[in-house]
Length: 268
Image (cartoon, rainbow, N blue to C red; front, side, top):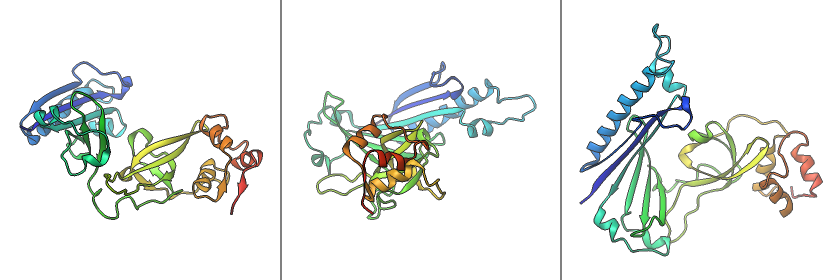
């Protein structure tokens, strides 16, 4: 028998990640529709309560609920997990990813926005009695032949993910289709934060958009772009120093000075 486990949390960002009382709710239901409707109703009621208890709810109505939402004053985590408990309890396939292909996941975790629109799914293949296994992120369109081809190595992109909203990044690994493995439409990216290199950022294609602006000639992302495209070479020591934060990526010295100091070889 398939069941649907609803988990929802709605809380104000005015208090950081602190969960206020009555911010969380969970339940198990027989249909996806029922779980979805109950989750949406909880979010609607809890969001209104948080708005009314905040400084945004003014007597003159100058700050509306829409302002409250627009200014990112509300965090919402809304998931529904589809599972067959008997199947999940007895799932023993384990050892290599390709064995999961063609079999249903033990847990299908669907993430929604506060309006109840599906954002993405995680297909989880969890070994019985353990939280170990494979987790595959899926979105609408991932099965299309052109999925994973929107961007190329070294492209500058802007993030739409809430954790890196509007951050400019450079791609250093693109999705690949491999025999006997599920295709995951995920890009690996680098960014600059506080003059330090941040790498191993993984974002889905739908969470990225092409960067249409221009960067200063000495912007460190341009060095990373050239490096990932193979237009310049950096020594192993330089790469490690960048990853460890021993070399700061700012304008003084510029990245060209870094290359010169580290004896990098210009290829093109």
